[in-house]
Length: 377
Ligand code: SF4
Image (cartoon, rainbow, N blue to C red):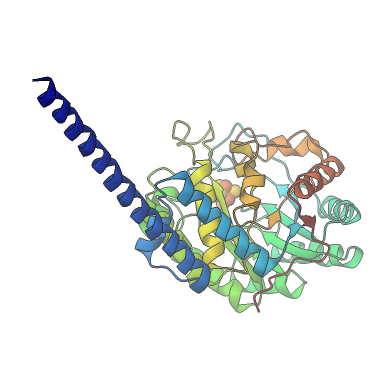
């Protein structure tokens, strides 16, 4: 009997070893499949929706690390090691819209809103230029108080006193309004589509039109703006397929900038109890977007720095090449609350500038000294 027990034990050990070997083989096949897909995206910058979904779903740390590594390599090859800073001026927290995920939505009556005068906006832009910023981003809720003529006045005044590119991020306007602002000297326009799936878009923006959003992006392209768009990762009701569609739309629009940040629930919105977007998924989206749009300017967003203390650094090592520090005086910052617990809320612009330069240098990179325009032409 002992002999029989011994041979049973040997047979069992052999079976376990065989199982392990076949599991290892299966695991290696899955990894190789993933690595090959990353290599294809790195070489060709084209993927199907199913392929993007596969890349968004790594099965191991090795797969994820390889995706980030190749995105970082491509970033280095196509847009270099410079990190371009965009000085962000949040000049009005008024908004006529009611996007379900946003703290600035008009239904949020507990927010203490503010508007800056054109003179104050120009003065802040001037200060930012003195701190070395080569791009100023003028951002607000959709606030019709600032007509195209007022914006044109601000853009011209900034361009007169500061050697900077001007980016606008003020929402949906008519073709004529976009034209007035472009002719006044605006160089770029940011208008995120937030989600490329029309049904999902309608659920997030009940009183808005997906078609109009896309039409606006096409008008901006037609007028010669450098156009930025993007999405929010982790919005309620979002699927992996939606995220893949977001990347495909960025590719189809051939955007010059791609902004991808995680959803962070705001307590005064209908999504107050929803789960937020994850760091892993946000970084995956940044990395795949880099592989698909090798020359795009891709920010390491403040939101990704809010959900993880190293979020911006990780994004900069997964394909991002831009940071958008806030250049607003500290007293206004808590009142532009798209989402809560934003980082750097109590900092003054000069401190932010030094801090961000330190972060960039710690990664072996340098702050860009030029406008950081799109390099893909
Ligand atoms: S996302 Fe933009 S348009 Fe929508 S409520 Fe917020 S600030 Fe307004």
